[in-house]
Image (cartoon, rainbow, N blue to C red; front, top):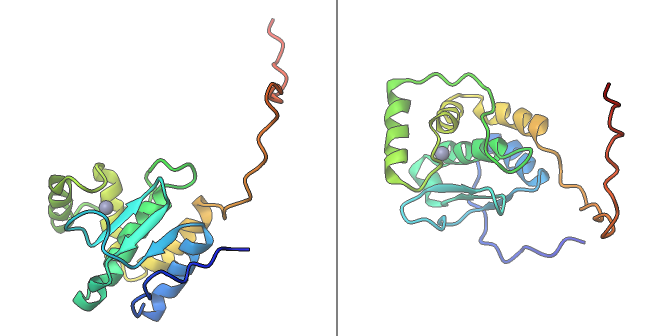
Length: 167
Ligand SMILES: [Zn+2]
């Protein structure tokens, strides 16, 4: 049984076209929090350790909720499969606008410190079908959380494949 998580603040009115993305994130074991991220001045944040995506509810009032959610969801997808952020490998042209945004973010010192990762996030957030692309990418890269396998008994040797004989 899942513990009740009903103490979370209510989600803002998410545009219907974003619901497949929020559902996919949750299916892949990411937590979505519609709250002020725990970093001053940030509208959105992804924390790989806790697999949590924050989107400030005010972003939907400001009209940047979609971009903010997609941006952070890109970072979530980048964190699959192993937690360390790696590029998705999607085309992410560097336009002057994106370049400017990335510079601002790198300068602000709170965000992901990798130009390529940011480039993908800004590129997808700016595409009309960015949310749908991301649903597919999440399915490709992430696996739904499986129950944690019982760790092998202390002292048990790893079942390493038999080493090939060397000549
Ligand atoms: Zn970012």
